[in-house]
Length: 247
Ligand code: C2E
Ligand code: MG
Ligand code: MG
Image (tube, rainbow, N blue to C red):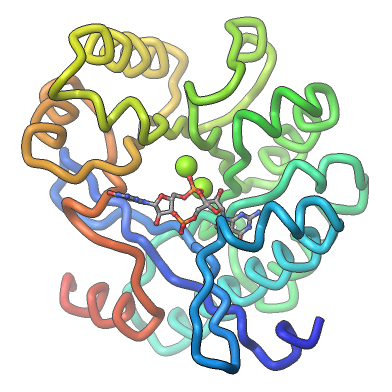
């Protein structure tokens, strides 16, 4: 709570790059904890703890509000702006008020729902099947696009794919990592892309770091890439400069 009040949680932005149109089409908001002793903690160091003690709910809303305020300021200043995705913990699914909190934040800053997207991980989806399904639907109902994060890393099933509505699928980094070395991985990625496209779902590949990975993904119709090959997560000021430069 103290860290939140002192604004020690900083939002970084990692651009998503379209390999079809060669431009930045969005970004993901990723939280960092810049503690007053100068150390910077990555989310993997504190999010599991916050998932356990329930504090993740407040942190997610805090990150969402920070992003929405950022978008509102940029639009007011007449700057270039792209939709930003924000991660949401599966714990939100058990609270029916969740969607209202998100919508109220958008209303407070007068930001259009199409400027944000919500990412939920596949693990979350599987553990809270029914409530997460409803949460996905309520975001869509309010015009907020939804993404299935880390697809393929957890316990996905075709049953889940057939019963869930979402707009974007993010292929887990563990697959992208094996593009050069594993023939089966290449087949699986090709299949995921084709399957998603026939269901009208856009595909983002996470964690592409090499030219070979990017070329394979491009040649097989992947829509967007979010990886160090193009951009690492960066502080707000840097992201704003990057968008300005692209105008
Ligand atoms: P994620 O949502 O799957 O985010 C992608 C992660 O992959 C980020 O790690 C990003 O920095 C990293 N990444 C992207 N491209 C590359 C690459 O080319 N190479 C490598 N090695 N890594 C790459 P990060 O920022 O450490 O975040 C880790 C996870 O923490 C996120 O995974 C997400 O699940 C969670 N997280 C971050 N911010 C939030 C938040 O505000 N709320 C919640 N609930 N979870 C969050
Ligand atoms: Mg994510
Ligand atoms: Mg991911």
